[in-house]
Image (cartoon, rainbow, N blue to C red; front, side, top):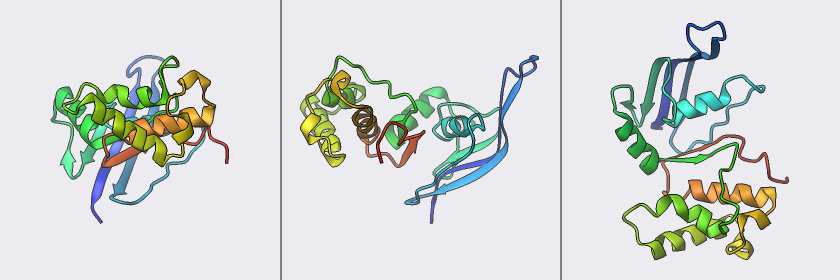
Length: 178
């Protein structure tokens, strides 16, 4: 199998050099292979979110290397890393970052309106992603009218809009009923 994300000896220190210095990660190495679901578990405050942020190119490690599809990331500009995030990675965050006055479809489509794809095509893809997640009956409801689990599915649909190579989900089922 091919590695889609690999971190080698990654460290992340917040407040480096200050009396409040926090070592969120110390020497973490992990390989995530294509087509394999990988779960990262640990107690609250153990660095899971920090690791996911580093793997998703949102945060730069204090030390260590990050590879996306066997390409080492440390030498690349933030502009290039942003393009990679937009094209290759989908994120489902702990906090959903949805706009309550917009509909489910509008929330899913919004981040993708600044692309070369037509508005009607973006809306079509957004509807398709929501339907895939069982939201066909709530497409045009305002997010404020949706349950926590439905809002989480809107976040997941938004993360799937760009057909990401990598889908990073931080506590993806925290708002959903079993």
